[in-house]
Length: 362
Image (cartoon, rainbow, N blue to C red):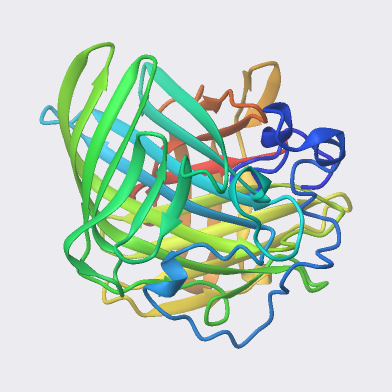
């Protein structure tokens, strides 16, 4: 993601430079310079033993980190909605944590709601060290201003549930409760998620088993909603190689109860790096190698002056899986400081279900 100001999501990097928090150097690097050397920051290495609730909290010795929730929802009439809540942390420089305004941590957050006929998004920025934003591991709380993801009793650290989630923008509000009955899922090799064959990686775990319920308000019109949600937690100091220009990422809820996480990191030589995790209804997982994943962009639409591939074919022959996905709203454009496409999708074929798609770098 380095050097490309269109790449955000888990790579939220240069947005804070626009807010006056990073300066020209950060902007030139694409916010956190995700494809550049992580020298001075903590490295990501295999063999980490995850510990909860500690790993629900921040890891300031690493350069970048995020707490990311997406929800596929319906109202009582069956109409589909999507909701997104994201908090990003970036360390502007390595070293001991400073106090107050001298603190080197900066925060950015995105929230969005999507319906078939509209997509609404909002963005916030904060400086670390002054209490405006942050994350506490126990009792769990992630916040920026009035946006919150808060643990409620009886909180299960191994599930990071139940949670209350709330955010608002100029023309939308949502408040959701997230419950789970399965433990967290480690992505990659026991939480060590490779992003290239050259050593780039992150620590990565998910809660794909959230059941969501609550309310969305769009243009002052409230509606009760329920459905499924997915949370990703990821941190790193150098997650991408310098020749990777963006990614295409899926989180899928199958009607039969399975879950699937897939991503494809696009490389300038077209030898894209892919990875996946097939998650059974009981929480057991099966890693899927890059060579076994076929992700093919199909129909593109013009969004914000760019051609965005919103329809995809996905095949994993080893799992006898062949599906085609379509967006709820093809215009699900996050017009944030460094924009990207993210929105709810549905899919059919050998399997059916719903999920979320994110595309950066287009």
